[in-house]
Amino acid sequence: MINIAINTFKEIIRNKYMYMIVFFWFIFIAFSIILWKLTIWEDSKIIVDFWLAMIEIFWLLGVLFVWSQLLFREIDWKTIFLILSKPIKRYEFIIWKIMWFSMTILLITLFQSILFIIVLFIKDINIDYLIIWSLVNIFLKLEIMLVIVFFLSTFMSNMLIIASSLMIYFASHSFSTILDLVNKMWNNIAINWVKLLQLLFPPFEALNTKDIIWNFSDFSNSYFMLNFVYSVWYFFIVLYFTVVIFSRKKFEN
Image 1 (cartoon, rainbow, N blue to C red):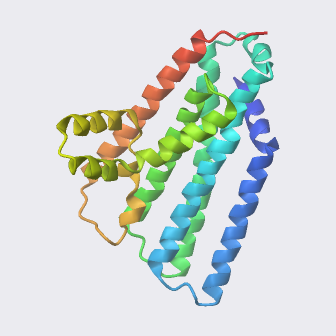
Image 2 (tube, rainbow, N blue to C red):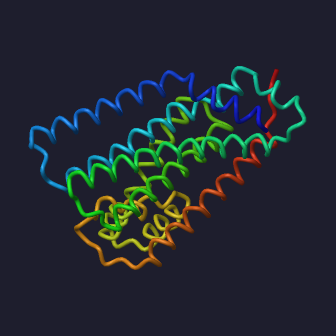
């Protein structure tokens, strides 16, 4: 298990896309600091929206372009045979891989969140509870995208993984719009099909609380906890099917 953790860490560190993402992330931080120095950027909402969007978008790219390669590359380059030849079960391999990737995402988002909160203190911006929940929800989104990427990696090529993951990500944010359009058709069958289809997609629209910070705050804690529990449940359901498919997958020499 330790070898899986070490190899996973080495794979992440060596990936060229990770360096590009980190580089552009620091560029955006420098850009935001320059804007503050020039007093162009005084709107608190813009600052909050920018940082939350930056945390989510940059590490969504990390999940898609870094994490999507790792399992696929081990299968494609046949290094999976060397790993599975050791006394380790397939489900252990997948679970430990995802666990270590999850820990990496947690550390990265925690570091960025601390920087973000420091910025809010410096700018004397009220730390609304929706901001904290938005950070938690961003982490949940990244975790769900991670397990979806692993799930797709068990039967798709790398480019299809990225394209399908992006489709799932954007579609999962758009179901209220889709339902509004379908409702105008007055077609109950279509409405029911969309609602059924929505259950298959992750609850990203419910987790997208960053768009309503300071616009609407009439939320109970039970609403956030329900979304949290549903997201965790969704994560483990996808993980289960990932393990099942990977355990039954036949690898060709």
